Length: 250
Image (cartoon, rainbow, N blue to C red; front, side, top):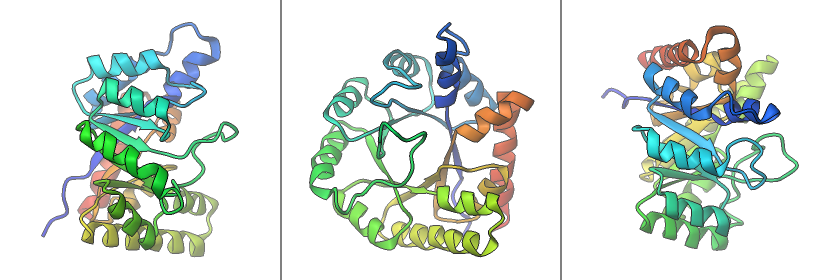
């Protein structure tokens, strides 16, 4: 049986990072979203952080109004962000950990220790008709906890694998890829929809694409970096080709 189509979600946060460096209105993250969609993105991801260091409230409003593909709204599980999600009603809300001091998301959400806080958040968002995903570490017990919370989707944190791969640590990379594979298989067997993201490049996305249970990859920083050299549209097309090549190798 063939693996399902592998969707590509493009995160446009760092287009907003560039804009905010001088705050002159460009480059426009909404324009980037349209370009990514035309080049083959299946959805657009944007993370509205508490400190508004890149995406801002107005960006989310415009994205919701202007793009026709699904909008994946990355948020911390705070009252402010849950209220915004309820008002904007994106296609999906991905709950992520967030610390002011971090440069980027450093790890998966603690859904075991944070169960009591997260359970009402997940129930509320699901009740609003929003597809809830949890950005988590690739561990089987975490898959069990996600199912217990009632979230239909998990996004596996692929950062540890990507860092080991880029560092040339083959043994660690094999270990981290095995964690991803095991968690994906276990989560899918529990009925969870499996996504993956963080740190993915053309090479690592091609490899992760060969995990049959993964149905969506969310990629941002690398694509925006590559866009400096090859243009955003071609970077998205190249990523789409890498993912398709990985999937075809199953």
